[in-house]
Picture 1 (tube, rainbow, N blue to C red):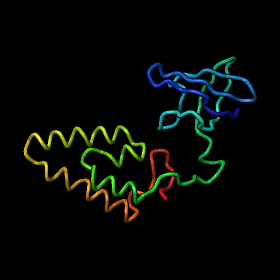
Picture 2: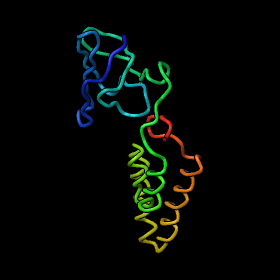
Picture 3: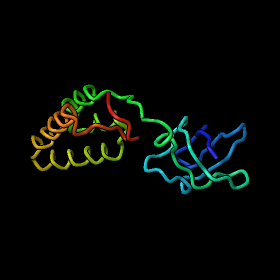
Length: 142
């Protein structure tokens, strides 16, 4: 079946899918995509009574992904807040942003803060050059 995510609670890892005016509950264990579900995502799933199983995103093969985030804004964020993962947060890459913050803290405490600051500039140039060209959902950058 095809439907869309009505709601998702990351704390309980449960959500609701609406399809043909019916609602189906799901657990994150049944989610097949790499990125967590978000309300409004179009999904394909198997029905099991009132529950959804084997849930995956359908936008990837139904239509060409549309750019929703700006690469130059991400590049500016990388150059200003790159060592704190600001550009990764903007692109929806939350775990990578948290890792960047942790590495920056370790480098700062050990006296290597200039390396962490250079990291943001390097990723800013990679964004401008097009080497980092997608957000967390695989959509191209504007």
